[in-house]
Structures are given as structure tokens and as C-alpha cells.
Image 1 (cartoon, rainbow over the protein chains, first blue to last red):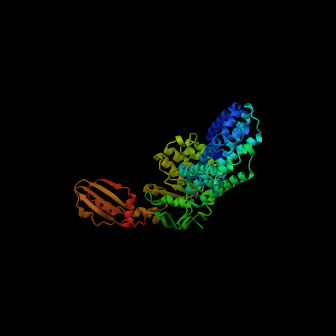
Image 2 (cartoon, chains in turn red, orange):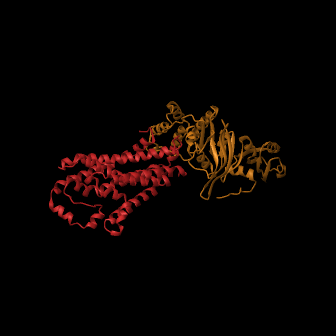
Image 3 (cartoon, helix red, strand yellow):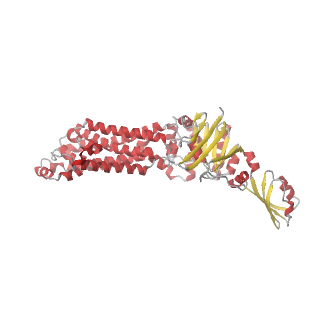
Length: 267
Length: 302
């Protein structure tokens, strides 16, 4: 694991990944365990139908016509709010710790005294962020695959995989914001702040766009819309939405690449 | 091209704050070059410019004929570096850290790591975070020398090392010199530079004041000196001797400053009964005084 920057960075993340995985698996398993009490219960669907639309929107739920089906339940309980939070916090922590983290710790000076180009350093660090976030997505998928049959949930493994991918991609988008901010500024605190701020603002933007008419078009600016506007667990991956998020990640990767080339290291 | 390190008008401002200005310097292959200056003079800034951690405001630098900025990876492949404040991965053991560094260099002969670690009595099995400052410094020394680089940039390399290890470090540097490696060593301690270096560059407030041989520097340096006599001595006997200044005699005690050879003063003193002679290692400030007289150099920016 000490062969290159990519593997070394993953190695540094192994504990963090293990703890987040444990928490995520536990939470997902608990939620799935409650499903039998909801399944096919018309009273609960009535309750959900009568819920104020505005409140639903603020909770990140755009459409929920079938809360008692496996996919509808998972969307309402897991993928609307908790899963995005977990993936965003996880990826922002990694992204901020990547380039800016090595500078904050002072270890960048030793690392860049080796014959490694800055280009390669950014690429390998970014790749490790992608790999670790994808890893957490994989864990979520496997956990749901294992838990769903136990709770009598009939849902296709492909749908669950698509849901896992979309959650990882949303997390990665904000992780890449933190990564880019860190690559440009070299400050970890700033990176976390920028990414957390971006997440909060774009979340609200998307939620309010569903309530306030004149804010309607603002949803196009929010990564949350491309995650939640057409939920993957209900309808599969929306190619267009997925493409927008992927494009955002690539754009932020390019910003990181260019930003880190130009500046002095913060030592 | 035999200048291993070449600076041409190298200038670095941090915003309005001056780092270094108009550095022109050549260090020849095989030399041990002492880069001497007080803390904050710009020593670390210079080395960081050479390693492309910082980008110059103007001017250029070459290491081994490679442009320090455009061809930095090639420069870094052939250079060993000890940072002024080595920050190593706290959760790795020395062994793991060196293995990582070696991989990034495409492999390093482990026998050279083992022999360096043994000489410095360096514990590679413990996590670096649990080591003392001195023991971390030893790992940084091993890291700089392990790949047998053509050039070594050593930024105050003995800070944190105990006297015994400093001796061992000095002999490692001397062996490097004997093997034809070039050493660029920054320090704020004159005796360290005197002991190891052939040539000295003096930097102050970001500007290179003087580059000369260690011998010339010593000859120029003002030393302060105290002589205790067996009885009272006349001040007149000592005033006006060659190289002697600031003479004060109080009863049987003489205090003065001497530049260059001690001979005239010693000959004059020998006419009386000498109880004790104490010379003081000239401080950096005293060396600067030798260059500037009593005047402070003009600082461009603080």
C-alpha cells in the first residue's frame, strides 16, 4: 500500500472508510428492518399523501406516490436525506484532506521533494477520492442486497446498484468541491467551509425551487436536483442527470489540476 | 556546465513582503557550500525556490543544468533534501515512510538505508509520531542521503541532533563531499559552517551580502577577546596594534576586538604576565559588523 500516492492515500483512509461503512450498514439495516410494518399498509400511504408538499420538499422528497413499495420506502427513508448526508460528509472530509491536508500537516514538503510531478500528485489524490467514495457506495449496495430479502423486500439488485452509484456520485461532487478548493488554496479549513457551504446553499435552492414558483428554474443549478429530481432507486439512473454530475466532477478535477500547478505550496 | 547550483537575479516576494532579492550565485560541483544567515534571512526561501515549492517573482535558478521550475521532477530526482522543520507522516513507522519515499523514487538500495540508520542509531520500527524531535531528524537525514543524490539541500540539518549525532552527521557530509556530491547547507551557526564548508554565502534580509571562502571569512571576522594579566597593564601598549580595536583596560584586565591574525596582540601581551586568554567565537552579528562597520544594511522590507 506504500507503492504510490494513490494507494498510500487510500491506506490513510482505511480507518475512516471502515467506520463510515459500519455506520452506514447499521443505519441501512435498521431502516430496512422497519419495512415489514410499512409494506402494503394503506394508512401509511394516506398519511404520506396528506403530508404538506412544502415540508416534503424541504426533506428532499420530490415525488413519493408509493411509499409502501420497497423502492418508494427506500427513497423516502434512506436516499432522500440520510444517505446523501453520509456520502457528502465522508467525501468532503477526504477531499479537503487530500492536497490541502498534506499541506496543513506539512508533509507536502517531503512528498514533493520526491521526483513526483504536481500533475501526477493531483491525479492520484483525486483518483483515491473517487475510489474511496465508490467504495462506500459499494458497501451501501452490498448492505441493501443482504438486508432487503430478509425484510421481504422485492427489489432488483440493479436498481439498488444504480441508487448506490447515484449517492456516491452526489457525494463525490461535493468531495470534488472540497478537493478543488484545497488544491487552489492549500487550506483545509477553507476547503471544508466552501464545500459545506455549497452543499447547504444548493440543497436549499433545490428544495425551495419545488415550493417557490419564481425559484423554479434555480433547481438546474443544484447538484441535488440531478441526484433527487429523478431518483435512481425508483426509476434507475437518469442518463442526463448522471452526466451532469459526472461533468461537474470532471470540471472540478480540472480546476484542481490547474489550480495546484500555479501556486506556491503552503508550507 | 560545472555550476551545480546557479541563481540568476532570483527574487521572491510574498505579496509585498520580501523573501529574497536579486540572488546571483554559483556553487561548483563537489563543493560544500555554507549558506549562512540569521533566522528569517531567506535561507529556507532560497532552497524552496530551488525545489519548485515556491515560484520566483523574477529571476531563474538551475540545478545540475536543469531549470529549477520547468524541470523540477528531474531536479528532485537527483537531489536529497532535509527540510528545516521536517514533518513526516506520524502514523507511519520510519521503515514505512522510507519505503514509501523509495517507491516514489522508483526504488532505493535498502543496504544504504540500513547502514545510514545504523550509523545514526535510528529506530525505524516505531511510528514517527512517537519519536522525539532528534529521532525524527535522523529519519530526515536518512531520507535525504539514501538514494545517493548528486546534490544535497540541507536546511539547518543538525537542529535537534545531540552533539554525538552532529559529529556523525558531519562525517556523513564529509564522506558525501569525498564521493563528489555537492552540498548546499544552510545554517545560522558559524562554527557549523566553518567545520564543514569550503565556501560561504552570507545572506541577510533576503540579500546575498558576500560569497567567499571559509578561510577568508575567518580572517575577516571580528573576534572579541579578554586577557587577564598578573598585574595592571598600560592601555597605551595595546592601542593601535594591527587589527586590534575597541581596547579597554581595567586594572589587570584587557578587553578588545581583533580582526585577522592574533599575532601582534599576543606578542604585545607576552611582555607581561598572562594569566588567562579567552576568545569568543564571533557571532553572526559580529561578522556582519565586519562587513558593514556599525551601519545596519538597508532593508527593503522588514
